[in-house]
Image (cartoon, rainbow, N blue to C red; front, side, top):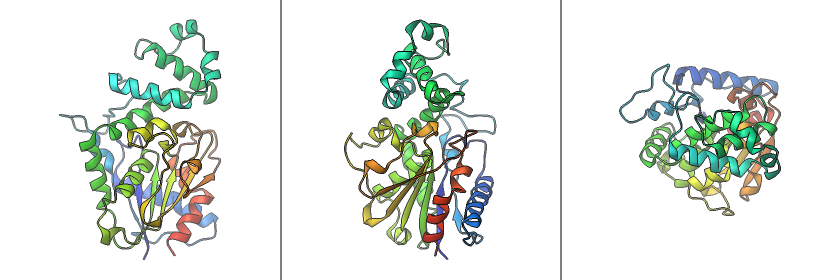
Length: 288
């Protein structure tokens, strides 16, 4: 039986492996059913819960303890990284529309530097209903993976243990797409566990943001790719705040973009991505 390894994304500190597996399996089955394909057999999906490793030094994540909550102040390194990431995705004309006087009276200047507040307001012009705040929260968690090498190694090791010789497809959502790509490109999975991997499927990937790629040591203009001829399909929604609305198709010769419309409620939703037609096609083909 061909198997799938899923790598979940941001904001999952209040979930569990069991809950995530139920949610992901249900969404994948809805998409497969809509496509007229067989639904997943029990045990097909393996979904390690890596968020439990994100506890700050000396702390343990509990059900009400999210280290990236908007009420938790930004550290200097976080503010710098989020500012650079927003500079990557905010068009100059949108920033020009936000006057300096407005940035002194709107938003949360008491918590964030004025430059960051202004960028958040500019991002909200393209992604209303708090898109800027959502981007800040997402990039904080992404940065924690990128710039804590010991943590990142532990996360990759946990995910690598989920593979076996029957694993054919790796699905990464949000920050999970960064982790999945990083793991595969480093070839840190034991050869006997990675030999059957055919496809990396990324959804809602922040790899579209140049600052995220730089955090992985990928220089601007350097092509992305995977070893061993593994295929790569990236599914994105232009309304997805976390991706800046962009795909990955132009970042490497082997990356195929698939565009979807996840609706206006939560375009970054894992469930909406996972039940989409492009995801169903990749899963159905990869698990034959």
